Every structure is written in C-alpha cells, then in structure tokens.
Amino acid sequence: MRKRHVFVTGATGYLGRRVIPELLARGHAVRALAREGSASRLPAGCEPVTGDALDAATFAARVPTCDTMLQLVGVAHPSPAKAKLFRTVDLASLRASVEAAAAPGATVAHFVYVSVAHPAPAMKAYWQARAEGEEILRASGIPSTILRPWYVLGPGHRWPYALIPFYWALERLPPTREGARRLGLVTLPQMIRALVAAVEAEPPPAPSPRIRIIEVPEIRAASLSSPLSA
Image 1 (cartoon, one colour):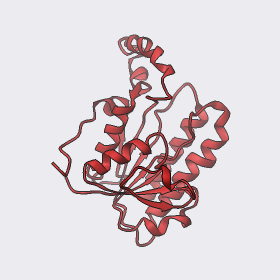
Image 2 (cartoon, one colour; image 1 turned 90 degrees about the vertical axis):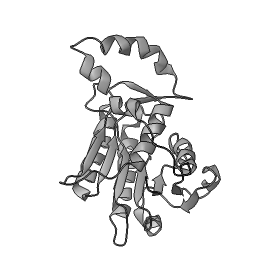
Image 3 (cartoon, one colour; image 1 turned 45 degrees about the horizontal axis):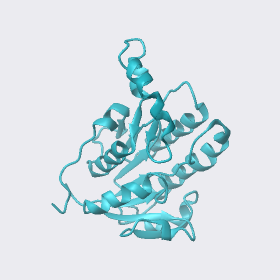
C-alpha cells in the first residue's frame, strides 16, 4: 500500500472528524478544507485549508499534489424539511469538488464520494440529489469510488437502533431481502473502516466509466490492511 495524499471536504463534519485521525494514524497525508474560523475544529495533524466547499475557486489551488479527493460534505440530520439544502449544499459542494479535482494542474487520480443508498421509498429529494452527484462524477471521467450507506448508527444517531430487529427479519424474507440489505443500517466504525479502505484502494480500472460502487453489505464487510507505519 502506498501513501495517499488526501484532500478532504466536510472535514469538520460527523464523518470527517473521525476518518481523518484514522488516515493520519495509517501514515497518509491529509489536507482538510474548513470554513473561515473553523480550522480549530479540524483533527490535529492535518493541513488546514481555508475555503468555501461550495466555491471551487476558494480551494482549487490547494488540490494539486493531492492524489485522492474525499467528499464528505452533507446537510446534518437529513429530513424532508431540508429538501432545498440537499441541492444547494450537498449537490453544489460535489460540483465544486469535481471542478477542483478536474482543474488544470490537479493530480487527483481517485475521487471517493459518500452518496446514499437508492432508490428508496423515503427521502426522495435526498437520494435524488446524491444520485445526481454520482452522474456528475461519471461524466467527469475521474476514477471514483462511491459509497452508498443509508443510515449510519453512532453518537447522536442512535434512534434507529430500535429498528434492528425489524431489519433482521426483513433481511431473512425473500420478498424483502434485497431492499432491506441495500437500505440497511451501518455502524459508525463500519463506515469509517469502509472510507479508509476506499481511500487506500487503487482507483477503479479501465474501461470507462471508472466507477466502483460500495453498497451497505460491502460497507459492513470492509477490512483494512496493515498501516503504513507497521
């Protein structure tokens, strides 16, 4: 495994604050985007970049020399009431990151994007915005790994634990098995492990579109090799 130079957007968010220390501990270099005044919230050891995740012009100059882009920007605690934000924040930030990653002089060889499981019977505006983001990545030609969790269980995200027995039953009934697995719950450690594994993996090979999709069962099963420092 070779050392990755990773540019992270959404670095101060729910996943960013947890995956960056893991990447650093495994010997990778991390450059992390944060809004003006938010750099103090970044994990220790990463290189801060001040900019606006919705405006590529504010951070594109700092993307060159990074070989991997990790896109984690997203509206906190998604709900139907935030439908407009899914396009003005989630989708707009993906557009900006793709623009920066594809700019002249950029060296991004692998784009890792957290999308969401779809299609789904709920949160249509949410998963449609993320699905549109996937199409933007496909059109860009950048080799990409797309992770599709549905709901990540962890601190502050615990209420769906009550649904685990319900999911357990649905995953064992043939008529509902596929949908229950695709829209299943993943734990925060599983998600962080899957993100690290995606960053460390080689970009999807030719032919185009060079896209790798990681669904819920693969997120749950993700494993890691020895860190670079071992």
